[in-house]
Image 1 (cartoon, rainbow, N blue to C red):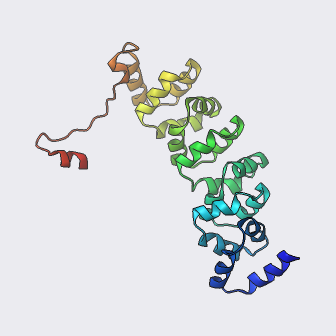
Image 2: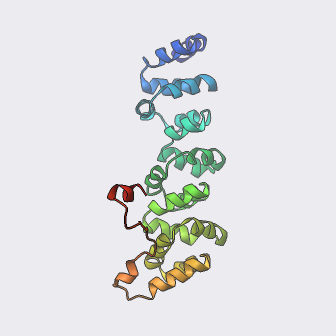
Image 3: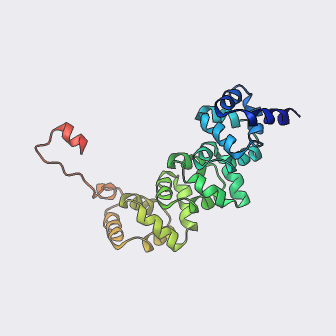
Length: 232
């Protein structure tokens, strides 16, 4: 077949010639060809492509083809390829061992966009496999509806880890917007210092300045210039 003949040719080319040849191929054909190449050659080709070329390569590829490419690629390359459809596929199949190192290389901004497109049960699954720091950064950017979903599903230990990573003002905002049962859960896993701060803020009337103020401030010496202040 044509694919078999082309594979024979590609397998005998040196690295430079291989990259030059694959760049001349139609991207949808190359995607199907990649899954038949060795892991080393596939890796070499994907690393030679920029983000735009990778997106073009996979825009017409099936989820199965994309998953096969991901499974044989480095984390860095795979995280470029990974999109909502592939994440959903892996979550539904329970392939968390494959997915965990891949999503750990994504930015919190990318993850927030994907989170809001997933079904509720998959949002929880995805959140629980994120590294702690990335989970906290991602959580901050989520809608309050998704935050409430996660807070409902997290165990005491998982919630405690999340609360420990959030700045106090973010915790205060959660307490202000969440229903009472979630507030109780948050407070039970917050530090004594955080509880004290939350209670002091909530003691102010609902629409007062005290309710929205932050106790965090930046102290600047009175002799500082504007330039110096901006550099602090």
